[in-house]
Amino acid sequence: MEDIRYRHEWKHEIRYVDLLTIRQRLRAVAIPDPHAQDGKYLIRSLYFDNLNDKALREKVDGVNRREKFRIRYYNGDLNLIHLEKKSKVSGLGAKYSAGLSAEEAQAIVDGRLDWMMDSGRSLVQELYTKMKFQGLRPRTIVDYTREPFIYGPGNVRVTFDYNIRTGLGCVDFLNPDCITIPAVDAGIILEVKWDNFLPSIIRDAVQTPGRRVTAFSKYAQCRMYD
Image (cartoon, rainbow, N blue to C red; front, side, top):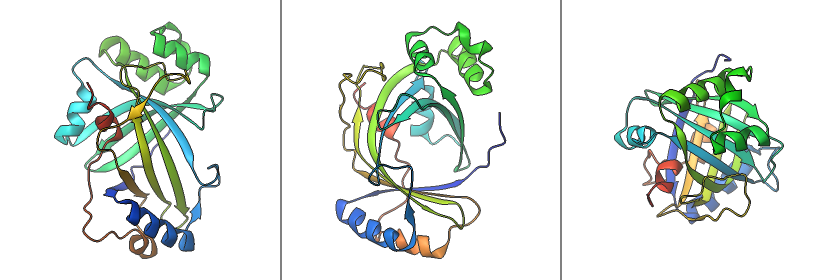
């Protein structure tokens, strides 16, 4: 597995008027992610947890060192699917990623796992081990819209996430007919991520008076129906 640097991360739950204001500021100093379509991604993720809801409970309890697995694709494109592991240590975050084919992703959803140890991808092998021996299973689909901006100095990425939806009990996330509904009390989430320093021009652009840094989790929000 490649060497991954831990990054700083802020999350703010903001109002629509804040989104309009901050978006306008960012357009003056940062650039939209060139891979986005019309400035946006439509993201679908499938999150994993065990029968004891370890990932969910650690998030809610604010455990200092935790991890979670998900499979993700963008804009309905099944030609580019990622298995990802998010790790958190003392408030810093890191992400590991490995590519999956649509057939491999469906096999994981269906519980057909034997091929994973021979995949040649360490992250796929790690997921296999944890599904086999720790009981990790697909738990919920999370859909949302993301508007991403990037700023070179500090390797800064600023995103707005909204229209957050949950797949309820459906985990067949490659199926476009899998029904999703709006998640409970899910508003607009502003995320700011950076490496060693956050330039003041970005810090000023994302200022939201009266808004505090939050530990909002789209996964946790979408598990409210369980």
